[in-house]
Image (cartoon, rainbow, N blue to C red; front, side, top):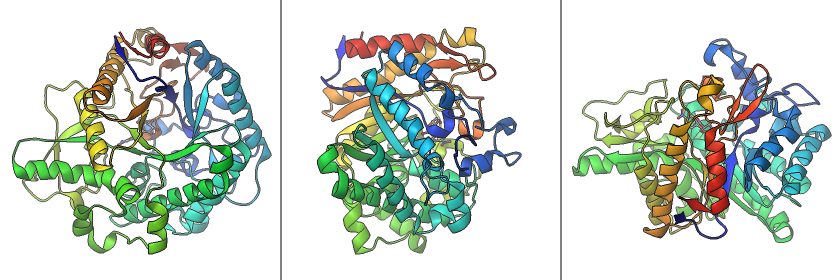
Amino acid sequence: MKSFPAHFTWGAATASHQIEGAWREDGRGPCIWDAFAHIPGKVYQNQNADVACDHYHRVEEDVALMKAMGLKAYRFSFSWSRLLPQGRGAINEAGVAFYNRLIDALLANNITPWVTLYHWDLPLALQMEMDGLINPEIADHFAHYAGICFERFGDRVKNWITLNEPWCSAVLGHGIGYFAPGRISQTEPYLAAHNLIRAHAKIVDVYRRKFQATQKGVIGITNNCDWREPKTDSAADRAAAERGLEFFLGWFADPIYRGDYPDSMRSAVGDRLPQFSDADRALVRGSSDFFGLNFYGGMLASEPSSEVVTSTVPTGNGGMAADQRVELSDDPSWEKTDMNWNVVPDFCRKMLGWIDRRYSHPAIYITENGCALPGEDDVAVAINDTRRVDFINRYLAACHAAINEDGVNLRGYFVWTLMDNFEWALGYSKRFGLHHVDFTTGKRTPKASAKWFAGVMARNGLE
Ligand code: PNW
């Protein structure tokens, strides 16, 4: 048996926009993903999250699913425009009541809530009135919204994540237009990223100054990164892999843990990369109590053989490809998920080691890991998801090795995701859930992986 440390956090994750539905009920305001999904051609088969898993009307049932599998922690996000329909101004008390019901139900069942304040569903009013994330003033609106959340929920919520995957908001939302708000630019991703980092720091500052001493919680940020493995042992390919990691994770984590963007980005991006003011730098540096990581896969990296052009499809998660100049490829022997993402558990261990070294041994939580598998529309196929069990088992074995052999301070692991849901631009066509959802009837059915993961949590280890 591979045992995990005592007090290791075991959980599952979701996000408001992907599960809640009830998009115009009880005073919820529209968000940028509502607007984006309603533009024909932006989402697979013009699907949208108007209903999604209808979690808004099924909270008690969904907490019962968690209880049935012995879930210890549940990571979910608040819909900003359900709490503040215009992003600022009046509070929607019906939205507060909804999250109170959810939080109280979790606590009544001994499930620890982990709340993400922002998982991509920016209130549409803030996009229309002030251009959303590319306006520096957005950071103050984030801080104001967060302060209301701490005030209303911080007596019971002790684990806060400011932002989910700002890389996606920057690159997919403002670089290639694949995600809301659908903008295409070589400049705006750096502005959006910069303002998100500033927003994160301002949120943490509010928490630390006004709430942390009395509420006694922790607060951090979740970033995503795919591993970059040098394709050959050449110095050029090793440098390309390192540059790839700096453009992916260093972009967001270096300012927080080291005080500025990586040098490789400064030299490649030049004037398009914003500077931190002294005041901002002071707030940003040290602004995370833990290191949240969403880990899904990786690719081989090499020095490009010719000029790199930027494409508008998210192949290989290249991100700002022309600036970073890294050629990405797959090893043909790799198994792939339904997302076409590579199944590379060894790379999870390498990623954890890289973070451990570069950022001086932080407490790390894997806040998402999981896989979409083909054929799971059919519930009979979905309930026999032995490939998902194998996937999670292998990634957890890699985590176990990182902890025990490499000394990495990994404190928890959340599966993405509790149940099949709205997978952004891919609509309902990709299923990551531990539970199958029939999107016609709303019926939830546990997959084999839910039962297997229940055992892992119960014994705090792998058999
Ligand atoms: C993460 N890409 O997102 C998110 O945090 C989840 O909301 C999402 O459902 C999950 O992973 C599975 O996709 C990503 O195309 C979505 O590069 C897409 C990409 C990266 C991350």
